[in-house]
Image (cartoon, rainbow, N blue to C red; front, side, top):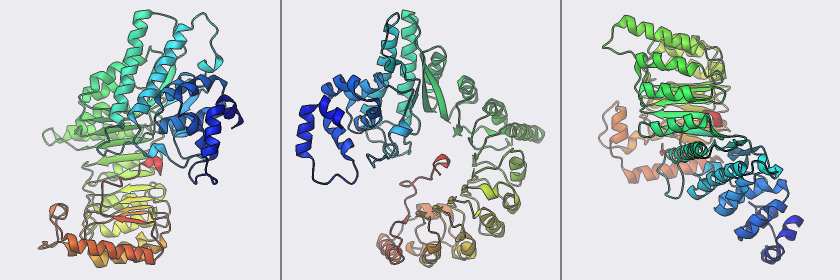
Length: 518
């Protein structure tokens, strides 16, 4: 604080006159002082060389939050530490309770960070043969991972992961083109860690950026890769360009690879020995190819899955795994902590195997959405809940045909999942009475924070029984009746001292927790 007063006597005097008698509950005096100082960006930039290094992290958060782009660019340009990490700098801290990582990043602030990095590299190139300031050479890693990617339509003033990928890729390409033109002294490279998103439209652009970064002072390092609707050969080409030591997750969406395509891709994924999360979809046999070939492809896929040593999350959504779950999970070298098997046509034998396997006792997240649990699967599902009860934090059972009778049958086991934080029951034919029973019995689950429940069947008119999931999702409800149900559920929560627990039908407003955030 004393240093700030010396550098900005006029601003400090103004600040102390303005300061309220009691500090804000959300911000410390140091934070508020920084915010006041940054009102004059030109003066703040001039003072940066005089400020202690210890003030830079908080200055970065204030500048990023308040879109002080001139200061933000200069902070990156002169960053005095080897690491600049968004996850460390933009989280809730002792000076400010606002967690910027839980918000869409400002486009202006993101662009300022990238411009600051570019300016830094240009400065280092221009300082060949001179004695630069030591703090200008400190930065080695810019970690931009962990930004919110909620899939919701974005505000025009914020940057999505797609936009972030494009912005970083453009910077990589520009840096390499500049190097080719100037052929000057190569500065010490800066590793930029990012989560990359790619589809058909952006594939060529991102591939060029990854190739450029191999010999550029700006080295792209991908932590999480999500490829959507990308042809098999393009997926392989990207995987070959990624650093095997950095990749944490591979997420292939809407690619409809089938076993034949997956058998081509999986060996390129298996080379990432530190991979912790693998998300695949639509893995099934091709009815047009001979069954012998299909079996060969499946056995090859299983053999490659056995190469992973650090895998903790596996998602196989919309894959035909009926009666084959034991073959898949038995090949893995270590227990999974997150398993997503939505719409996989599971049979009782699959659930029985999972309940007996080593995976069950380690599961933190389980998604069985779209699998019918109302018939012969109900008993093995209860056994699975019992086996996973001590560790389970997140349970997704959307569209599982669970009516009141099935819910009441599993409630004693379900409520013994004492650490459960999230329960998803959307799209199940439950009545008002069933929901009230769940609300009352779940009082023993002290960690429960979110329940995504269906519209009660009592609120529909002319509903066939048993109602198909498609009808529950598309049919109209009596809004007035449902409003009364919502109010009643809310009163029950208040009466039981659980006003902090969210009961909602909004499946989009509260997205499923990511495994790495559990």
